[in-house]
Amino acid sequence: MTPFRFDYYAALHAAAPRILEDARKEAAALNIPDEWRGRFGVSGSNSSAPGTLRKEVVNAIVAASSDYHPLVRIGDEIRRIVKSVYGDDFDAVTINSAEAALALSYAALLAPSQIGTGDPGRAVVVVPWERHIEHHGSYGRPVPGLYKDLFADRGASTGEFGLLGRRIPFVDLALTRLAGARYEIHGVKSYAAPLLLHVDADASGAVLEAQARRHAANLAGFVSLGYDTPGFGHPEKDPDGASKLHKQYGRLAAEFGVPYIADNAWGTPFLGTDPRPINADVILYSMDKVAGGPTAGLIIGKEVSLINIRRALGVHGERFGTVSSHGKGSHAAFDPGKEALHGTLAALRLLRDEPRRFLQPVDITWQIVEDEYSRVKGKLKPGIVINKTVNSGGAEINYQDTWDNGGFGIPVFTHEDRIARTNIYNNILADIGIVPNISDDANILINPGAGTFDNNGTVVEERLRLAVRASFLALVVLQNWSDKIVAGKR
Image (tube, helix red, strand yellow):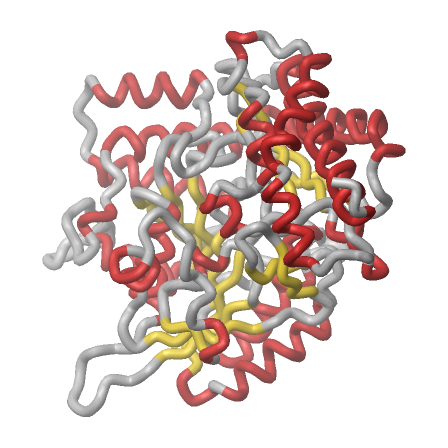
């Protein structure tokens, strides 16, 4: 008898030691050198392990650390770089992290005013139920109540000092299901997995519009991820390359006269998601992920929106009248510091002036993923979808369709599995010496960077190919164990 899904994942969890043992045996043929183990993989970086820097960025930071530079000059030069790409109607500011950029954007653009007599107002922000909403969808109170415990176990610290502590007073997050998405329960740490490969942009726009009209009296804005791949809900693109779903957010924000914030932390400025065609008021980046910069955040947006943000950071001029400054505003704790400013400036110059140095690794990565998939394609169920992603700097592997027609496909692990360390796919890679990447909800990102770049940002193809081969090996091992469990042969 075919197992129920919770029995299936319980059996996977019980078999985890044997699954790892099988993976080790299979991985022996890869001949991974001992000195490489744990020092290379398929991740460019993450928040706890920032990416490697190109020599130009390192040199800029080193030179700045031994010289005197008023920081306002560096901040203004970053603004000039951004304006030279997006036009004079856009502006920019550097901050200490993308998470700080989110917190500040909520506070400066979405939270209700506390000035004036009477009861405080409430602000409602419409957020799609997509991946990683523990970041951009946790700065308010989730509504309806169905979602109030959605983030219960995410992050290193939950409750008052974790995600509850993030919430901004009097802000509600109206979480909205996207049309065409599937929200199924998966994982050893059992939670709903947003499966977004077949999202319908126009139908989703209608759902989002209905949600906005429901909360029109208190509507403060729209917030979504800026990632533009099919696995993140963006299979439909316009001729200009922009996601139709992103354009729906921008259209609705314009119609209701509220801001649209795109959280593009795992994105590449200038080369990836363009804020102009999607009408984003603000787009946020983590410079140390795939953008090639130091540990810092970057906020790019329309000038009218950036005024509030820059004022809050204390960089929008002195009170006695200057065009810009670098003082201590209400969010002084978000100051990025001298080295981060110089490194961000150097990285942005490279992105603008030498884009091939970023685009070529994307092409190489995508080709390696295609090659390695062709080696194992016959061992995996149909339904694997591979896409190139300039925005996220590599390739995306999605396997949600291996579960089509009610059958059991490759096991799907949730974000909660990653936090609880029950994501067996990631555990296989780590056990055989490969640094894993984001692999939540049947969606895997492959990026060069972790031990697969030299200091010029050139891909070390031998290492990257080995890491990608190991990634598909892990999927094959999991597919085999899935079949055993379904057949009752475990």
